[in-house]
Image 1: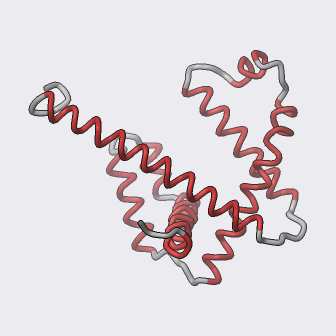
Image 2: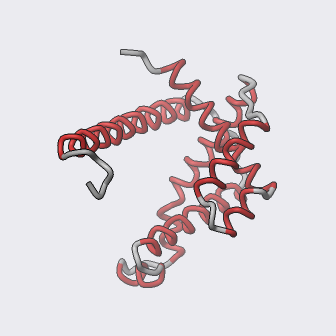
Length: 174
């Protein structure tokens, strides 16, 4: 009752539905990765600007640090525990960083070629969702109105549209 369900049966159904939703999301994600990997395998790239790869490596390090911090640790302790330096982790991340940059470039090019665009209204709607989700967080309220965040949302929404289109074009329906 403290979880706002009428009875145990309703609670069990909600858990079952949640597990099924998570399982389907994992299946969808694996199919999307496979699809993008196949596209990357068939795409020829010229030289990729080192600054793009370095930027991606920095993002990956920030993601790692945020993940460790969210679990109550800190990056330096983690690095010590695995007996590695930031530079060693950066070298290990390099192939993934290059793949992420290539994927980003391919998605951006597909959006351009297929004229997949995000409207200001779509961005506004997402900004409002974020503001409603964090009504008491002044930092997020301020960030949600900044041009850099709107640009970020435009990229995220565009990527989502491209992935959705690729799924429709390339993944057979049941």
